[in-house]
Structures are given as C-alpha cells and as structure tokens.
Length: 534
Ligand code: G4P
Image (cartoon, rainbow, N blue to C red; front, side, top):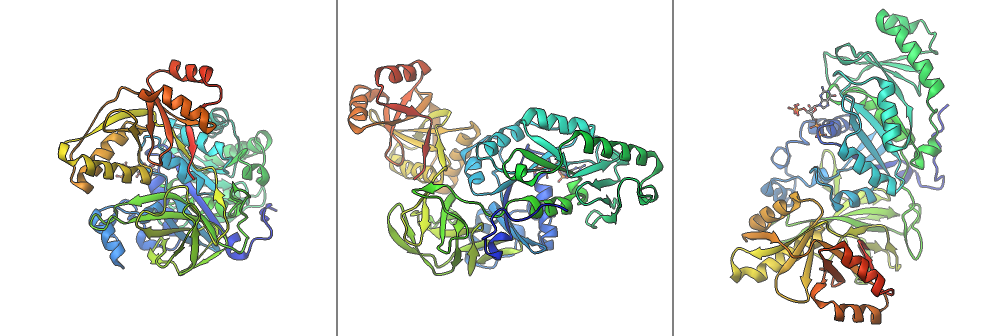
C-alpha cells in the first residue's frame, strides 16, 4: 500500500487536490513535448502541439487575448491549469532561455514541487544542475522523468548513480525500463506492480497496462519478449535490493527523488508520471511570511506576486501580475489589501490560465495562480491580504553579475529611456542603478543574453534605439546597516554610490578588494548580494 496520505490533513478538499509545480530541464531534454502531453492528458486535447505555436494558433476569446495575439507572445503558457482525474494541476513555466535568471528563481518560489526532465542519453546536464541547486535552496520536492528512452540511452543503474552523485539526492525507481533504444518496449511500474507497454504505432494512445503479481508472475513471460524478460527480473530484483525504497516523507523534504522512465514524444510514461505527481507531489504548502507563516487552509485569502509581465498591450502599457494564492478561497470582485501601499484593491478581472483557454477567474483556491491586470501598482514580491499586515518572504533579488551603461541612441530621448528602463526593472528583467555622480543609468543583468533581449524590447515597445556600453563598474552590492553608519559610508564613497529602482543604496565597484576593504573599514555596514523584495 502506498503512503499517500496528506501531510496537511486539515486542508479543504479543494485545496488538497491541487498540485502546483514547475518543470526544470536542460534545453532539448523534452520539456515542451512533456508539457504538451500533460495538456493532452489534462483533457485539453486541442492544445497539444500548440505550446510551441504561441499566440496566433490560439482561439481568441477576449480583448485581452487579442493583445496577446498582437504581440505574438503567449503569456498563457506562463501558468497552465488542467485537471487530471480528481486533481487540479497548476503548471508554472520556467523561462526558456538558457541564461539563468532571477525570473527562474522566482518562478520556483511559486510552486510546491518540480519535475526534473533529463535526457536518457545525456544524463544530468549543466542547466539541470543549476536549476536543481535552486530547488534545493528551498528544499522543493523533485520528481524525475528520464526522457527519450526510445533512443539509445545509458544503462539504467548508471543514470541513477549519476543523479545520486551529481545532485547528492537519493533516487528511487518508480518505474524500470524494459529494453533500450529501438528495443525499448515499456516499463515495469515498481510502485504498483504493473507492466506498462508502449504502443509505438500510435503516439497518442495510452499504453497497455497489465497487473502483475510479483516478479515470478508468468504474465511477465507472456508479454515481455524472451530476450528481455530474464534481464528485467534480474534488474528489478537488484534495484529493489540496492536502491532505497520510496519514502514519501523523504520525497516531500527534498532528500529523495522518484524517477520514471519514458518517452514524451511517444506519450509513454507520462500518465505514470502524472499519477506520481498526484500521489507524491505535495499539496499547497505553508508559505513563509513575516510576522507569521501563512497556512493554505486559512479562510482568509492571501497571495503574492512572483512575476510581472509588462507591455502586453503597447498602447495601454498595462501589465499582468502573476499571483500565487497562499491561502483561502478567492472570489472574483473581492477587495484585497495591497500590503506595501496599504491601499485596497478590488480584483475585478482576474485571469485563470486554463489549459483549454484563458478565462476570467470566478474563483480560485490556495495553490492556484491568477493573473491580475493592473497599471503598475503590483510589483514582484508584493503581498495581497484581506487586511492583515503580512509580507511573504523569500523572494530575493540578486545582485547582477554583469553591468553596462545604457545610452539612448537619440540623446533627446534620454527621459523616455529612463521610463523604459524603470518599467523593465519593475518587471524584474534587469536592475537599474542611478549613480550619485554623473549622468545616465547602469543596467545590471545576470546573463549576457539579457542585454540583447532588453535592447530589442526597448526598441520594439518604446521605439527607442539603445546602446549598452562597458561600464567602469563590474559588481553591485546593496548597502545595509544603521542609518548613521550608511550615511557616513555613502558620504565618503560617493563615486561608488548609486540607487536602485526602489531607491535603495547600492555600492558599485570593479574589485573584490574594494568590497573586502569596506567590510574591514566599516564594521557597521554590510554589503549584500541579495535583497528581499518587499
Ligand atoms: P525542450 O523544450 O526541453 O527544449 O525540448 P523539446 O520538447 O522541444 O524537445 C527537444 C527535441 O527532442 C525535439 O526534437 C523533440 O521532438 C525531441 N523529443 C522530445 N521527447 C522525445 C522522446 O521521448 N524521444 C525522442 N526520440 N525525441 C524526443 P527536435 O527535432 O528538436 O524538434 P521537432 O522538430 O521534433 O519539434
């Protein structure tokens, strides 16, 4: 019997059936294909194949979607909700580009679990490793899908060993592949003792499932070719002896990952993975906040903004804030308090990202993601409550690793450039620093590609040509400490001081040596490379 009891027994059934997760992977491992198959099984059959198709392939249902179409991008894909059996899945997309960005980190603050997709021939690749480390910072439970088993892939024990060693996590096989490459015929379901056989002829057909009564069951010989059955029995017996058995608590704490083998393109193994997410993926979890934590079963609604998508309509400059509900039962038209400004806001047009379409959300529960269109009031890290002064914590801002000076192609348009940069800073796409001395702005990003993306967006969305040039600085640190100490420090180091887009003091430098010196000479001042967004 599998231990799938809720770890939060007081949750209302509507919340307990929710699973909010993201997929992490190295480019090309099969994230898009797997997402399509999730949607296929999630009942949104018409969507399969459209994740790639972006805006124009979708049906338009509202003006809002028209804007999306005009811009040729799809924000719906940022969060998708669909049902699987009695469960409601919320899949939050991690940004696709290969540069690691804060966006990715913040996306992972909005989920309760991650599905790690690896390519069976390539194993753990660099981007997977980086994303995994981010999940580990939050002890996120991770379920693993080893994809492309229909191609030549590595030995199953080798793959498992590599994950255990590279990622320092226990791996337990939830399924065991039978045959490899062209000879791959399906998997043995180690959790439910079933044979799952792939239908190669029809990619979207659900695999054949056969109950098996232990490894000695003659049904195995009936269904598995003679050249594979002995190996299967031997490997499964060995795996049971050598590898740890599934321990749900350990999975929930992020110490153990169950692994499923399959082939997303052949729809194989996907249903088993989804069943695994339902059975072992956690329900909405407690959210860290100050001055107290937020439990999902609380009746009052709370939520926080983890992503802002700006300029969905270039004419109106409106934005959509993606809000993860942390507690309660949200209803359309509700009046919530925007904690940072202490102002009430009535949420009249929240959007739910249903896989089949994008709809006005009449209601939503803790664990769901809703989109709130707004004119810039909502920023990343903001908390919404029914009045209580609570602030969700753990949504950091990272010091950028690359700094460049932004220059308007047309000097007359410097003011416009400032506006554009501020907008992107709010969206979290870059850091913008205004030096205390001199003119212009220093823009900071985490990955080099982001400068190109920024330049092209500024040009497209604001009609402003912009150049990014080398800056005299290479590092930025936030300055913290008692006011008197910070004032004394900034006064003596004016050449290095700037303010970020929130008005917080930042120290800019070229040399690590400078940072060490500040720490030595100003013991009351601390320089940090992260800042909580509040
Ligand atoms: P990504 O989002 O992680 O970058 O990966 P994506 O799903 O786009 O898949 C990358 C490539 O791998 C695609 O091929 C896709 O068809 C293929 N693929 C995905 N799952 C499987 C699988 O189970 N088996 C095999 N053999 N291939 C798989 P492509 O040629 O780059 O694109 P396309 O022309 O097929 O769309």
